[in-house]
Image (cartoon, rainbow, N blue to C red; front, side, top):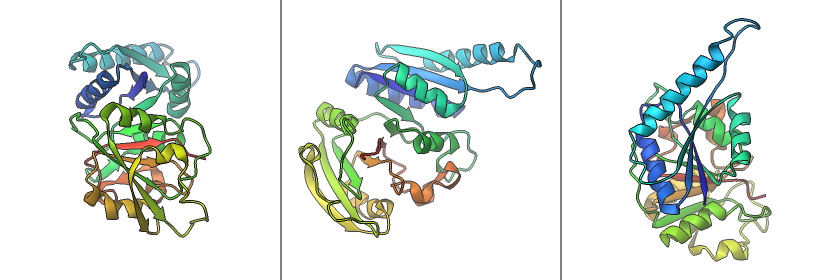
Length: 265
C-alpha cells in the first residue's frame, strides 16, 4: 500500500480524520494525497474569476488543516480539483495509482443520527475504489482482529483482496470470515478459494435476509478492530443506500473502521 487518498470536506472532524490518515499511512510507509473537489455553477460569461478564487480558498483551507496535524515524516501532497466529485476522484485515483481512499462517516450533515453522509455515501456507492471508512474522532490503533462478511466467497477479479492482505500482513491480524446465507444464495457461493482461505483463521455462518443483518448479529461477539465488506449490486449497504445516506440507528458498528473492497466479481 503506497498511495492513500483523503478527500476533505467541511466536516468539523477533518483535522482528527487527517491525523488518523497520517498515522495509518506512516504504518505502511505510504504517501498521502489530501484533496478537495469543488464545482462552480454559474451562467456563461459571469463570475469569470470565481474558479481562481475557489481554487485558492480551497488550497488555503487544506493547507490550514494539514498544518494542524503531526505529519510524522509522512509525505503529504495537497491538491484541489475542479469538477464533478465522482469523475474527478476516479481520475485522481487512476493518475496517482491510489491503493485506498480514506473517508469520514459523516460530512456536511446536521443530522446526528447519520452514519454515512451524502458525500461519503456517494463515493462508496458510485466508485469502485477500495475505501476505509473511519469513525468520527477515532484514534489510530493496530487492526489485530478483522471480520470479513460475505454472502458469496466467489472471487473473479484479480487483486481485489490486496487491501485486506496488506492490512493483515502489516498488523499480523487474525481474520475471521462470516458467510451469510441470504434468499439470493446460489450453490457454490460458500466455496472459498485458496487466496481467501489462506487469510482466514475461523469461519462463521449465518442465515439472514441480508449480509448487513448477518453482521449486526455477529460483529459484537467477534469484537473486531476492523469490519471488511464488499461492494455488490445486492451488497452490504444496499438496504441503506436510498439517497446515499446511511443512518447510525441502522448501522450499529459506527464505532469501528469499515474496509470496503471493490466487487469480487
